[in-house]
Image (cartoon, rainbow, N blue to C red; front, top):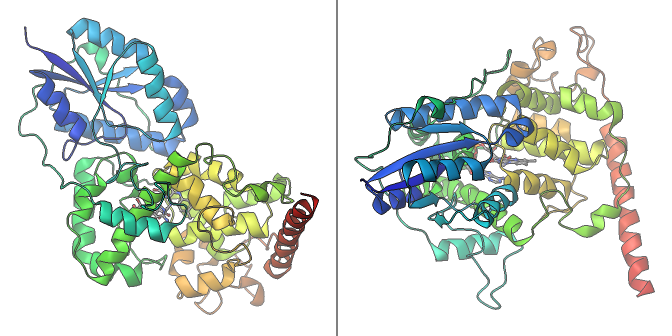
Length: 455
Ligand SMILES: Cc1cc2nc3c(=O)[nH]c(=O)nc-3n(C[C@H](O)[C@H](O)[C@H](O)COP(=O)(O)OP(=O)(O)OC[C@H]3O[C@@H](n4cnc5c(N)ncnc54)[C@H](O)[C@@H]3O)c2cc1C
């Protein structure tokens, strides 16, 4: 009888440069490719992300010649059934470092299923980059980046030429039927879509990435984040094709932010929900109420903020510059805790990554790693003027402002017909809230000083 191994796909939905798949193929004559849908997880995921995952599974199945087993149920039960049915001698996975995935794998192992870990979703696995001086993890990005480059990573490996996979039974083909929610438009999922996006980006935008990446209305970034999140492409594949130009260097640095945040969350468990800098727990925050609702709906009355939130609702993706602006607005203009925004992003982003999201939020809120100082508060009007000069981005997502010129669109309250198409009034006055925010910062500084005196 042919020997068999299981390749358990999770956030590595690709065939190229997939070390766990190669290890599974090497371990046996035939592989059993499986994806397990845990109903608990399905409940927690937003509809846009589920629709994306559904498409990605179909694409993986196609590359596997329709041999992907898709099972709904508890991971331990499903794996035990597959092991016993097929006589599988090993179960192969790509190592998970984020809290949910790591805990799930630990639970599977505690139930007596041995997992063979090969590779990870990172070029350099979390925990590997340490300070040479005392072998502790980095807390600041720039020195991490330098050490990460010195550490280096392996070259990508091509997809296997032949994959001998067992043919799934009827009951193993539980592909979810998650439609793209009405009125939304998500990007195409799957390994082939990832590679075609990468090719397009390399040809059209990579060489000007350093200059164009901040402009919200330009297609100047790779839009590979959802592909990276679901492992439809491995970061090594991208890194291997970068040269030494300034633009390529800046792109490499962005990939490294993802690696840095993966490392930070791994070394600081709990910071996906808790304050990285503890003293910000003591800050005075407001109750969410109506103003949180308006932020979620993209109706704050600040055009650049609203355009970003509506892009998120419509596409499940938002430009990085605008992510920073809306996050700053939630924390520093509305005085709400970053976790509220983080959860909302988690529900809506197709590229949701727990480490990048939580630490992207904490960084902007001023309580994270290497944070821009808290008192540096994004001005939502100036940010719009700088990074959406002509107002094209705002016009695309906020039709009530589409009739305004570039000079008018960032401050509709100054113009006679600014509100003529139903655009909402400003929920707060930025100039006032900026001062309020700084006053609240002063309070926690004083608390800290008092505590130090009391020591
Ligand atoms: C509040 C906030 C929340 C965020 N939440 C997420 C999230 O859930 N998932 C996510 O992938 N990114 C998140 N980011 C980071 C960043 O906004 C996105 O990675 C980026 O916008 C994705 O677009 P892109 O693929 O075109 O990026 P590009 O500019 O083309 O960058 C290439 C890749 O580098 C990585 N990258 C770029 N910038 C960052 C960054 N600041 N932090 C971490 N990785 C980065 C991403 O994997 C990205 O795909 C968040 C940022 C902020 C400020």
